[in-house]
Image (cartoon, rainbow, N blue to C red; front, side):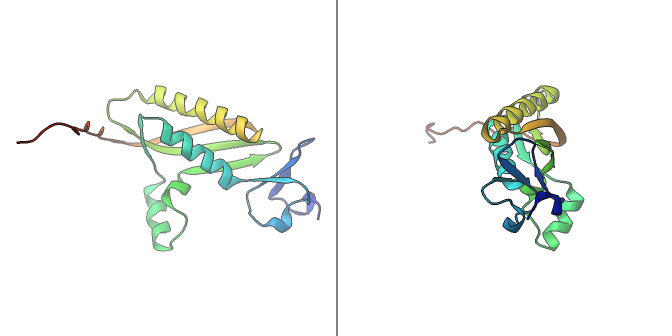
Length: 150
């Protein structure tokens, strides 16, 4: 089947892979490498975990509540939105940060790390990384491991 028959499959011009928002393998062109949105979301998730000023990923509380009722995707998956276009990808990420951080600095750091990681691992051009800071959590209390208690 040709890509033109399936609007949710985009093949980048002169690129050896297909971008898929839908995991249906029937929509892929035989012999192509398929980059699924879940792969990109996994990359983003790992980047978020590496930035110490970010507390956690989070989706919209209203959507999260409804999704829990219908047992939809995990909240962390809903906190990352991937949009494909011809040979490129745009990403939206919803996070909580720790109290006391400089939010624009954390967001810029996240944007750069996501662009670098997604580009280097997939070869895709990242057209944008939108960061939504939905809230602030208290910073974790430093561990007192190793101290003696009487």
